[in-house]
Image (cartoon, rainbow, N blue to C red):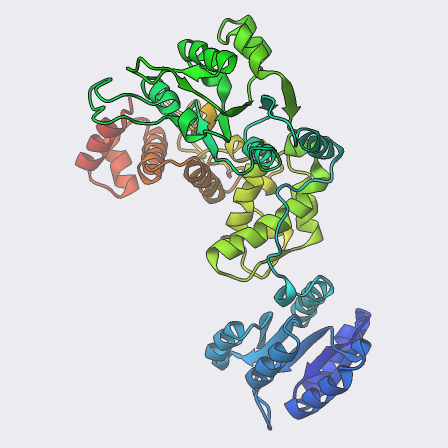
Length: 512
């Protein structure tokens, strides 16, 4: 293993760090000034084993500062982790150190075990690929080494010269549109347009016009003729996502297009020929939908010419590390920051997670980590609460229960995308002694609040402040009323608000 370089004009600092690192089987090499370090780096240019694994440098030394040394080292070895040691009075310099690319700073006087732990983290970082040498290479269309994904890739290859209709099935967030785009890209229609439409996201009254277009005057507001998605996809591919949610009467029109290749615009009298390949996708069991009468059997057979099943992410845990690193780089590029690295322990925690939201959920987690993780190396402790809890995802976690509550009208649960509901903060029965000391909560309610906010934001909600504020206020008032056995004035006093305020809030929040 390459040595840890220690740069400090204070012999006692060098001695203490050397002995502590040697006890950890970490080799060291010490220097008293920056000139010695730069000379040693030139010698190490011809022999990589002489180069440092990590460099720990004081910030104030005769003959050149640690920040100057940092600038020169980053120019020569951009991937080398550099830890800057600084006195408490040099915190402005510490900020400069981070701006200059330092891995971390170590304030003096330092706790020796903490210093060793920090250096070990830097060693781990150094042993991975150097951050500064990471580049956003042309990423493959899809990532996956799991056998189930390899089957999908082989199917895409076999269909590369075909125009046959394909039905893609799989859970929400598993990447169905990505597969549809790959099918289009590797088909004879690759030079034509790829048009996608989510049939579940468009109101029934508008969906027909979206798909087939409309003539001028076909309905109120139709002031001009409009081409629908079938015409927009002429010569290319039309991707119909969530086909299982298509209204029954529109299923009939779609069947006719697939059967004879012609359709009519809304309000039109002249048929339009459709030269379009249709790829459909759903997370639902279409056979069951047919049995229940919610989906036309003849349309199902028209769509189900070739079926591709996408595995859930929990079925391909071996792909989580590669996907995580890819999404961390994508997030960093989008945000204009340096891509973060992730430790093996954090990757193992992610790989063991259930991922009810599949690849989309992992992508959101990586974006969250790019913003929220405090250091350049993501540790297991930095993962979001839903992963740390080892549950089934964001939707499975609610804000921790308050220590006491009153039997009252519960706050309703919040609908999320895809029909899932965010658990509500349920009211529980009043304790035998409402004035008894509250039992400690089983979880961190602030983390729970963060999880719920994250879920609502990811679902595209635009009323997150109002929704969570109402629930927070409801819980506070219910708890205070439980504590005072329903006496409003006393509850208001305990909460530090006026009696008119609590009365108004009870009415606004619908608390009985």
